[in-house]
Length: 510
Image (cartoon, rainbow, N blue to C red):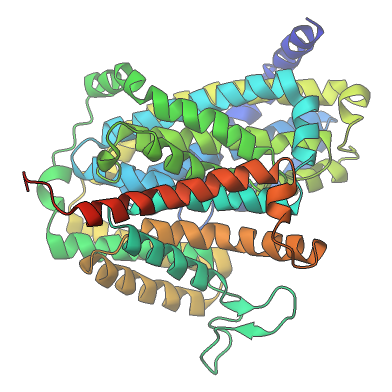
């Protein structure tokens, strides 16, 4: 009961005109920052962090600037789906999985339903995570603290296990795609010895920093998708007839319950992954997509415009964004890159995140938590209101849209890394992705592997250093053991099915 009273008082503070205005402004800014390729929540929060000092001086409180930054975080999580669905370019790594089904649905002339599904799933995921955060913050923080290097690697292994189902029925091609992505993730300098790895050119600027994720993602889903669309001439008939009517948007909202399964998986799994230190929304969204596909009645619909394929990652990245706040506030450990920037802001404003924050600074904590609820409601309303604008972009002739995609891809990569070598590499990746699609190799597992590879590798090596090279550490620890066993089963099951089908041969009907 005390929690509800404190939450109610916090929501009232968040609804004060100044704080509400900052929440609305933050959500709108975050929405467009998240939709811009190469930016995302980290860049938006970092760029606007200096502006919060003006807010603090005007209000005399650390609560208002934190509400503003948290609203940007929320808005950016919503905004990432916009460019993923309308242009096929993920605004940030958290929105990559949304591209898998969001773009095919848009190409079918159902971009309105894709955008509505993404917005409402984000709202549901954010709401569920807010409730879990409010009710179980201290015990969940202690559970997250039990996850050491072996446990996080086991979780990454479980994520890789879900990838096996992302490439369709051709398991060997899927495994090859995963391994190829892991190889790309190792390019650069070794994290332990400092030795160069897979740097084959004299000009080390190309690969010395490794292959950046956005270079790969925007190259594959921006440049590669644009070339594929031009080559296959799929665009003209389906996209020019996009309907922007209010009735269609309302119909999409009424049909949202069809995506309840993906939304539920993303909401709970995303929050759990989000609370793990150094995990964040990207692994949560990718894992949720994989689990949703594995448990689907018809997995073959994924990648062709499944509403659950949109709802699962979108619910997950919004749920994880709230979950990542939990270790930051209760333990002083950032749960994602964006919360690391938020943590820096809190320290600058004289606050000390950690176990005593809730008891010593309730006037800061509960208005901030209340703003999570307010920002979530504002974000879904703003997002739904702007859907006609997003759909209008799809009505542009492809002769205009293709150069726009190309320019946004170039600008997005350069803005993210400010390196012309990454821009050139992005273009090469785009052409490479086009030829890989012609050979019918799945791209999604490779992209997902390069996301989690840099997380999994250091955890694996640190775990083996801790155990003197003994792999049993992943089986004997009480949390890591069951996760590792489940991951191995999920990896082997499709292989056994494939071998069994090969032995049996084609059915008589075939």
